[in-house]
Image 1 (cartoon, rainbow, N blue to C red):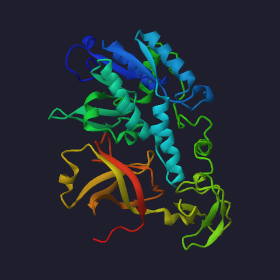
Image 2 (cartoon, rainbow, N blue to C red):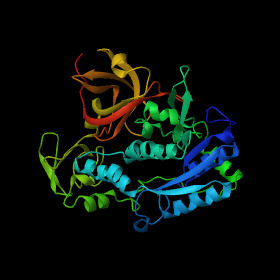
Image 3 (tube, one colour):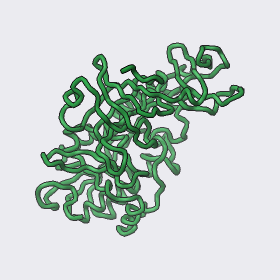
Image 4 (cartoon, one colour):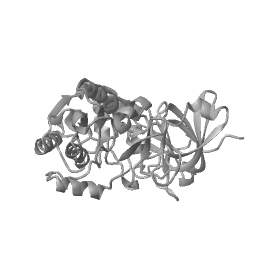
Length: 383
């Protein structure tokens, strides 16, 4: 795996900053690059008040993680720095997370974190440290194209692929980012950790939102936005009141549990109306959406997106949730806004979530970009 970062010059003359979270993946990333001879510098971000968050299985970025990252750096013999990004993280990620839920959306804070903190601010820090590249432990692949530019691809192990959370990465950032684990499986990563003698080889994976250590995201929202949990009506698709709720922040599109409504058939949350504080419910078939309007679209495919569309529509595959497989779709521009039309429809499409574009559905397909879901509709636009 010699010179796996695909950079010019000898590895020992190439400084690499590795974003070290204290987990297995970023630790192995640092160890692999150090073993290859690179001049590795580990950086861990303090993202929130660690005194207020207890470390527990499935949580990340807690105080124990900083300790683990430092221990790994000592073990492999690299310098390690802890940077206080708490205020920046609160502004760019936590506050936006709360605002999105209050607006009736289902946010993806990991996308905002990668977009604004890790791949913007941390890249700036890497440059200040005279590093040629920033490496992370994400399971995604970056490869050089014939024209010299770099492109993003899904990871080798489909179950570990994290490309959904990286769609907002720009062309300029891709030139400076590297993902050494993209062609490895998790089992191979853990085996590498054992080979390097890292104490975190069997550490649990991060699963929860890092700044919600209790798993109760509504506690964060109510603390940041007092009074956000206003009661309202639960209504059916025709507007008939079926019951009451204690705040739309407690619900997401596709949710079935917690409605406390008895009926002849199961009901699901179909839509959240923040303006009227209404939770709209309906049968499962009402969850199927065909048309998705997008905002803040980022394109990292070939040439400019508008040129690719040129008044028509582009065949793509999209993921509307990180755990869903890519689905066939058409991307078009209507009245100056980008829209996705799903060939077979998709359930549980929620505003605030990401819709990520790929050039295929199988294997290590290329990531073409994506956007945030502004709204969704059941019917496809008439041709």
